[in-house]
Image 1 (cartoon, rainbow, N blue to C red):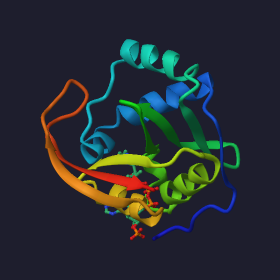
Image 2 (cartoon, protein in one colour; image 1 turned 90 degrees about the horizontal axis):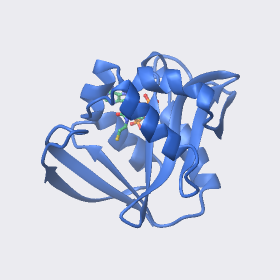
Image 3 (cartoon, rainbow, N blue to C red; image 1 turned 135 degrees about the vertical axis):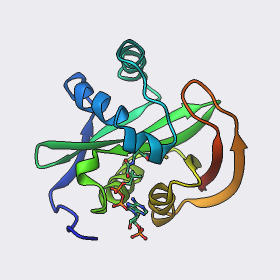
Length: 159
Ligand SMILES: CC(C)(COP(=O)(O)OP(=O)(O)OC[C@H]1O[C@@H](n2cnc3c(N)ncnc32)[C@H](O)[C@@H]1OP(=O)(O)O)[C@@H](O)C(=O)NCCC(=O)NCCS
């Protein structure tokens, strides 16, 4: 890694004031290519986050270095299962931030098992999951949706 993991990295709840940065990150074309996802437009993004911020089943955390917002890491439910997800500001990639932030989330999140999905091509995300103890379950071809282009998706579980 070219730069070290910042020592003063911590998590705090996501608040409405974080949303403009989160919107910009999810619209970053390079990040979208990596995650194999399509950005939400602003109205769809706002509707989504209005729900998420008050959903008691979501543990949404902003990742901060000092008081600077650098990413998000969350636990949320889909079809009755708890999943984790994360997204880091591109300026901060490659410093161990996602791995550390996910480890911090796992320390405060009691739900198990936890599940995660990553595009098979998203090597960095697959490494993050494996570093945090997730085990590979299967690869599966998933058809395109409005949110995600078609791709081979890797499924993981933390027991
Ligand atoms: C994927 C992402 C979360 C990784 O964040 P990060 O803070 O850079 O990750 P880390 O620094 O903790 O690196 C994790 C591992 O990936 C590797 N890695 C980092 N960037 C990489 C890249 N561009 N290509 C390949 N491997 C990479 C690191 O070397 C590290 O490997 P190691 O465990 O063998 O040391 C970040 O790039 C991102 O937010 N991408 C866009 C959104 C996204 O893909 N979210 C996940 C959707 S499933």
